[in-house]
Image (cartoon, rainbow, N blue to C red; front, side, top):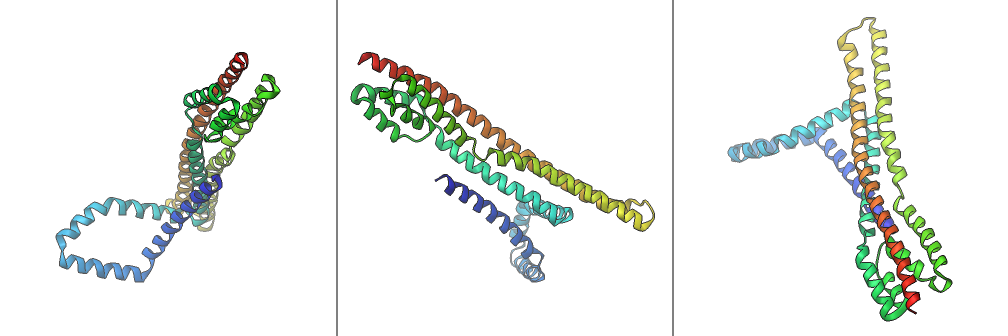
Length: 272
């Protein structure tokens, strides 16, 4: 199920990127421009008032799309494409983790009440059945502890701690990759900056004169790649911090619930 969510997220992000590039190529082709001009002229002749209203509504988005497209091309397809790929894969992993953590969240108080009621009414097997039918890492930890009740409370505590570490590792899965993309994005931007500055100095050497017009192109590319890399890192960093906070919250609930389970089993054995 987790792999399916990851595959859907990655496929969605790649499809969005492919759609953007396809729209850009279509907009750049002469045939598309001719068709667009003919359609716009016909629409203007038939309904000028409606056309004016539509242009006012879509003007902001069109300008923004054009500016982003222009800056992407000016920054260079190589480095800008690499930075865009880090954003796509980083967001895909972040969305997969968000879905997984939401599914892993459990109402621990409700689960503890159900387990205690099952222990009092049907014994350990009934409590295990409750945990088996509940999703999330807390229920899995409860099941491992209940499965070893006959071996003593000490064994139950060790199994709960051990399996809790396993569940914590599953919660933190792919976070290292997200942090890697956070580090790579600005590095790629800085690399584009260095290459842009080298290009600027090459042009100065060729021209034999320090002219603002000669230097401006290389410096512009350098600044665009740097800004793009930093923006990607900021976006992914926000998702990363959100995921870490969610994991910490789930882990705290796991620890509290595990202690409550051990206390519950001690009381249950004393009653018996």
